[in-house]
Length: 208
Image: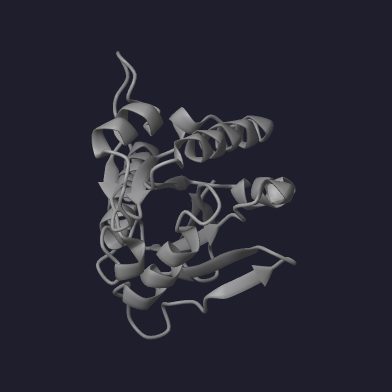
């Protein structure tokens, strides 16, 4: 749930990167931190909360192009979750207050089951928090397209994309090679635009 900070005149929006272990969540955040367009002072430090064998990353930023809403700047807070299932409690903590989700799937052949297990884990953890993925703006990223043999994009869309079933809207999805920053900013831009539109509509309704 977005937080309004009256002191700094900021609307804080939380985005979580979720997906299987070693799928590219951390690489996405590092690349975004290195390439996002903002002004000095509007980019937070990339922070790692490390466990014995995994870590959670986060930082915040105010996009250069972002329009103000009712005099408030939109600050996006980006988080990753630890990939290993033994840190599931940490995943749930990171998901608290989430506004948008990027699901990073591994395109390598033989990784589909891990992708599906991680997606189900996401749904289960959201349900624990009394949330539903269908109600949260989200996008899919099919990462590691540079490591053949890869799963065909059509198969990834039809298998992973939760809207890919008959009668359901297909969510936006992007092919990516995160270690080269290919598809990384496109993925994030899509989600931030969806979130901005959502909160702009909410603001307009409040003013009506």
